[in-house]
Length: 488
Image (tube, rainbow, N blue to C red; front, side, top):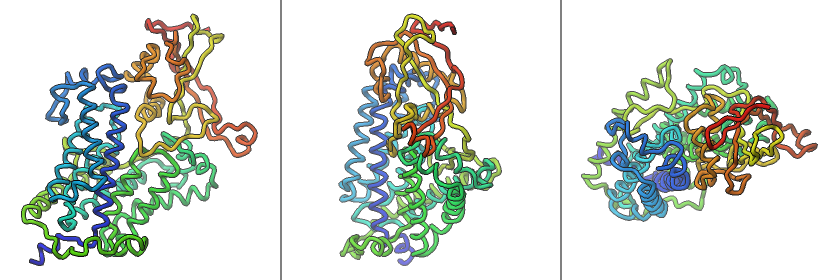
């Protein structure tokens, strides 16, 4: 039947390969990040312990496998299972079987990671968490090598890219004036949460180039997404623009897997002929016997049901997109499907960094030898070149960026200072450098600094990439006994 054959998209096998393997690879990174950081941040003895959080937890509101029992060992088993399943999907092993095999594999990743996110509290309150969950659920229905790629699912993946890009564009237009007067990039490269190795060079580019950057961003996010649904090769060209702009963001900053997942998802609009034309080494016909492939009736029914579900759930994000009170990074259902996205509606004009110091001295006065704790990703040492961490997510470093925008007097931050006073080994592993080599300090204190990138002349003279100015003492010296030091 013609209407049945319409559901098949035989010219999008390359897109399916990229989507399935790419999303699985990002799940691998997410589970690895959780395995390395979750116990110290949220474990039984973490900064915000999950067992305590679960005491007032509603399973109906946030589904999780940890609802009835949490332990650090169980968390490790969940992460290990996620790593194993995602590795198999990257290798393409489940895709060799019937379509329900990769379906179950991706749904397992979705459920396992959702269990982590839903108890992750502020350390998992990022838009790319729900984006990864939605992407994993959607690509689960792309089938296997035994079936043709389903057209409706590819369209829904393109719809996800549209919401991601157009939502981000609209939140900017409706947000700070700097996006409308084209000055946002005067500040963003310098004040973004976690600069990368090229961020300073990007910041030092001429201001006219920064204005062109903003114009290019508006075009890529407000115009291009509509062409993802156009006939080929226009849709592939639109996808190429999305990929190019996201690669620039990858090069100029560290946004965990946000940019990488946008790149992977954009391939949903790239057809095999276009991919072969750009990269001739790619096969034009992935399955020479493709004519013998067919979608079993049960699989057609499953993909149609999934399509209808995601279309119905699209009502809420569409209403949000056209609303003057547009929400940013919000989910409208407890399964975190068909969400609304957006970032940086306003741009911070100055970079304020929270610096934590400790001392072994008996008295915490200015004559004490105060030593600074070094973080892996956030700026600290003014001479150090920022590293490229994305798509890996340094959760503690990201939360440190939010502190001056909110308040340093957050529960998790005081718990963090307490762990430093104990020289807690798992907490210290989250840092780049412990200045006391595992010995507990007698006091810790917190200072607030203004950071800015050094000009080229300043860097040549001093070798320092940052120029910082002390603003004030955010938290006076604290001791393990909870006492505060006197200012002298």
